[in-house]
Length: 111
Image 1 (cartoon, one colour):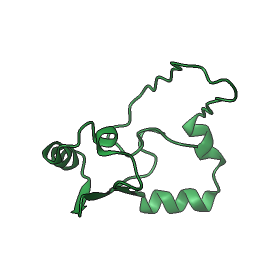
Image 2 (cartoon, helix red, strand yellow; image 1 turned 135 degrees about the vertical axis):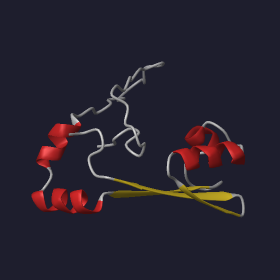
Image 3 (tube, rainbow, N blue to C red; image 1 turned 135 degrees about the horizontal axis):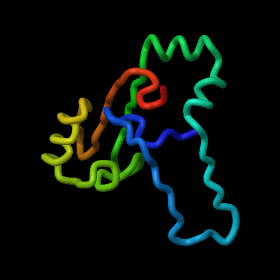
Image 4 (spheres, rainbow, N blue to C red; image 1 turned 180 degrees about the vertical axis):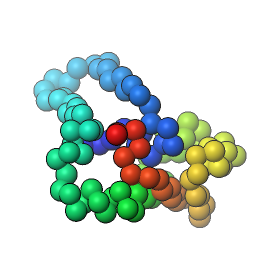
């Protein structure tokens, strides 16, 4: 299950999902209660995540990753660096590519 915006320091209390154009076929969006998913995880995995937290590493370049405008709302380096500083995200710029790394405690916003 994808946990929308789980990497943020403050996880939103509400997520709104909409469909602007219905697909011709398929198109189902799976939704789950994060607390229920947590209860179904193996106890040893839950203990490890509680102990270690989480790390999210992402790459943004012309070949892989979400475009900067989509990920940060801007491609302006100064804007991205302000966002990173405010949200405890480590940045590494290299040859027009960006690598980000962030970490946080387990179950933010779930329990």
